[in-house]
Length: 262
Image 1 (cartoon, rainbow, N blue to C red):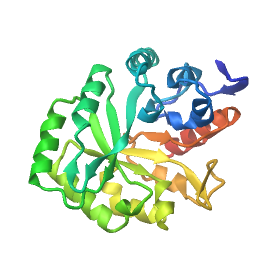
Image 2 (tube, rainbow, N blue to C red):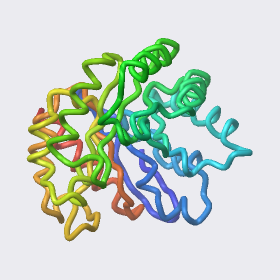
Image 3 (cartoon, rainbow, N blue to C red):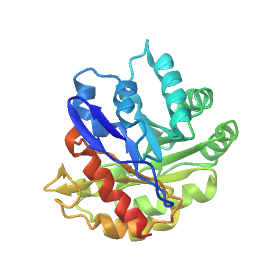
């Protein structure tokens, strides 16, 4: 089956025994900036070989968010997609836990969101109180909360790796989203960073970078195929960069080929 969206045609059918690529709605950045809803963007993927979708909190309108999430939940169930949500906040500020976390966990529980992602933030000085609060909060959530490396000094290596491992040991229910592109803004190679944190990666955000600009896979300097090949098969790989609609099928197919090599 072929899909037509925004005047463009792309084909990528369901099939295969390996995990398929996943989509963060950042791929629809231009349409979202033009006012299209995430729900309408995701309808372009109906029938396509997608494992999971991830929506972004910053693209919802407060007055329509609940209804849109309900509709996206129904779409995910109909298409057998995993449902993920990116929180546009940090988990820690100066070692203190984000006070909005419980609200996001409740939202995720209501809408059957299996994965929440949030930037780690300033967690270097987290203490036992924060750990206890985080463990307690996560007990009420049936999904997984992951923290992500950021494109700023809060994710500078090796301190980030040390803090991340210490936190995940203290909060076993927490996971980690590796963003392959964010390292470039710290003058770090994603391949080098990967080796320091690969043992705790539970979600992978994929993008290719050239001169601190996101480009199509293969047009940048990231050895992304090797990174994907080194991931455990159960780790979902999300495309998370703006893609022209006519190129979406091609980009998905590139990831699908890499996943088949795992």
